[in-house]
Image 1 (cartoon, rainbow, N blue to C red):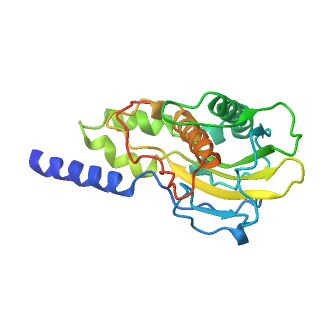
Image 2: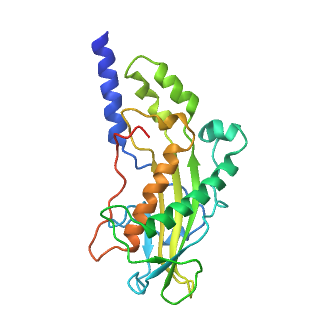
Image 3: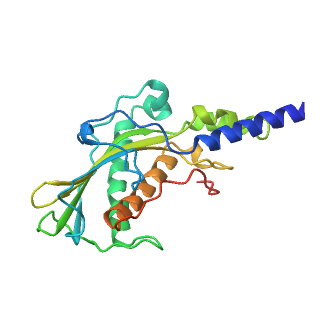
Length: 244
């Protein structure tokens, strides 16, 4: 019996880790022209488009626009979870959008160790050497705290069986544009799922994992804006040992 249970747990663990954190691409929300987008193996996104006549080299300043939440994709009751049932999902997303903008500003100003940025963050989108980053949150699937609690109440190790039905995801669409002319430099779209954790405390809150995804996106976007020729920007890791 114990051997059979262990086999189930190991098989489930392998399935979760094999799936990785890269969720399936989201449907187009219309914030960027999806007809232009295609896979770019040098970028950590599901799809992107580069302007062949423009690049980031000519820019030294960046303005981060307020994050858009008006393009949210429709979600069913299960995806919205307890946050949707509370009737405050849109309010929560609007509040998260403010935090995401601050993540981006802070990360461009003070990149993490090993990441370099030549950009100065400015308060106004003016100047011919200024880049503008426009981002839209198009999906946030909150964690289901009650389901997470139920998984902890299950026999040791078997709570992982609920992981496939309790995965928080987030999706975004965005663009870097010339602040003076509005000409696009790079369009992109991505959707990510939470990282696998041996111990998951973040699952007890609705948005801990979604916020983590967006903090990772902030680092990736700094890397993308500073990408060197031939450089490949890595995707998010499949797992983490952090309980949050």
